[in-house]
Structure formats: structure tokens, C-alpha cells
Length: 331
Image (tube, rainbow, N blue to C red; front, side):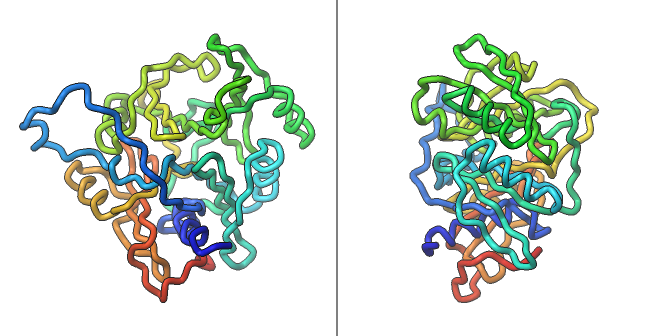
């Protein structure tokens, strides 16, 4: 494994929650040219500029976000089989954490889906029906061929997905991974290659206005037109950076939260600037700005209005320890 890949891997560890402070599934944090933020519809007034800083979008150094999944240790073999074999994601070099534990990485486009064994303390887990709770409820993947993904799922003992026409030239179905988390499969024949390299993250929120403001104004994602999703049964409000889209919707207030089953990771060039911006906006902090001991990694873990982890990692900053590039051994 090259040193650059190892550097990238460090960040993934934090996202998954395996480190019990932050754990993001391990990820090849790749420094890439950030996608340019959208042009403003109108220049902000001087008063508005003084009231709030710019978003953190300009600090992104990867052309996508990374997504991670946490689950119990006993589910690991089936989870790896499901994501690698049934969903046909591209396996990357896993990170050995010691004691037989690993951070499992899958590449998709320039980003990653990260699998982390072990639940993180202090987080809430509410699976079940799609809209049974708030938080990240579904990950959406795209395929060119319905027969191919169906046959792979059936080959590993999963039922055939019940695909439905979406009305936009695609077909979609919902399945669950072995940990009980929803995956939406969208078949888009003859789409551009970039479509199959994209990932969408669906978040059921308790307050649409607050969540839309968070992802638009603080994170700075491109705001796209609302979309009615017949398969999910909701109207989605999409926010995009490069190959990754975050869709938010709401079915009402008072639902239990899921703040631990999945999260979002951003690779940035200056995490201290992210932290300063977050403090100005009173964004909730899950794990304060810190260096990862023994690694060249500096991070801050923030929460969106429903407690969803938005984890920001700067590779090549802080840590020390002689520039060690391998993952830590345990939580």
C-alpha cells in the first residue's frame, strides 16, 4: 500500500466510530480538486455578510463525500459479502485495527463507503421501517443493468428486488443490508459513467428549514430542485458536492433518532477553519477539534440539527508520532 493511500486510510478510521471518540470508517482520503461551489443567485448584502461567514465548501479537498456504516461485530462477514459481492462495490485495502478487527473500505467514484464493526457509545440506533426515525435512513446506488444486480443478490440468498418505474426513465427498489439498513438501488440504463460513480444519502429530518439551512449555508452544498421519490414515498430536497448528494426530507416531528448507524465524512484542507466557522454558527460539536495521536490527522466531528455526524478530516496535520501512516490497533 503506498504512503498516500495510507494517509488516506487514517481518516476513515475516525469516521466509523471504532475509535470510540470519533470513528469514521476508514477511508482513502484523497486530495482532489474541490468542486466549485455554485454561483450565488444574488450578492449578499453587507449586513448579511457580516452576520454569517461563508460556508466551508471552499475547504473541501475531495470531489465527493465519504459515507460510513456502523454495525455489530457478528454481522461483519455478511456485511462484507453483501457490499462486495452482491452490490459489486470495488474493494480497497482494509485497515487492520488489531485483535482481528478491520476497517473495510469500498471505492465508488472518488469517494468511499466504509464499513466499521462495533457500535459507538453515546449514539442512538433506530433501524426498522424507512421513516421510523430521523437520521440517515438510506444509501442510494446506481446500476446500468437490473438483471445483473438482481442475479447477484439472489446468488447470495437475498430476495429479488421489487423494482418499480420511477417515471423518469429509471427503475428503483429498496433492499436491506445484513445489518438492517436500507439501500436504494436505481437502474439507469445507458447513463453517463459518472452516474454509476455517484452515491446519494437520504436523511429524514425533524425540521426541514433547519436541515436545509445547515447543508446549504454551513456546509455549502449545491442546492438542487426538489424531487418526488415514488419509491421512498417522500419529496427529497437534494444537496450535492461532486459525486455525492445528500437528500433531506421530513415526515414529521417526534420520531426517535438514529445518530449512529451511518454518517458523512468530508476531507478538507483546513479543519481549524471549519471549526471556527462552526463555532460562529453554534453548530453542535460531537467531538471537539483534535489531533489523532500518532497520526498526521486533525479532525472535528459536528452534528447536523438531528444529530447526524458530519465529520471533517484534514490529512497531513497534527498527530506527530513520527509521521506514522498506519491505523491504530483498537478503539
